[in-house]
Image 1 (tube, helix red, strand yellow):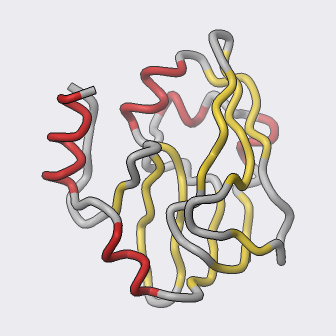
Image 2: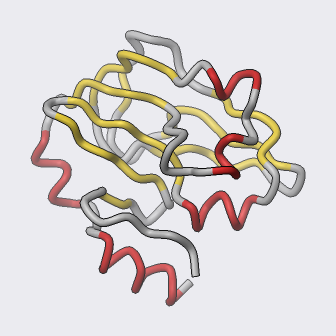
Length: 127
């Protein structure tokens, strides 16, 4: 069973958001990195780019497949995880520790559309 962390918000496309104040740290879940296999490249937006809930903001490539990253929330990118440029495999080591982008949230109400840990676990079991 993939690791799921309480207190995060999860999307059906297997991204998570960790919220701190008005910022969201977005990455892919343990379930997603497991399904992808060895991550070899992460395509990330630039700082100051806008991301929109439900829309693509980048991609993760593995030896098996490439997968679009779909933003679970809307906001402005304030930081990208530069470590992933040289070491994309960090996502396989710990997907929750190695977030992909940090955004300033434009509408926290969007979080209500996402799943909590229990709902996400059920969702993954049904996949």
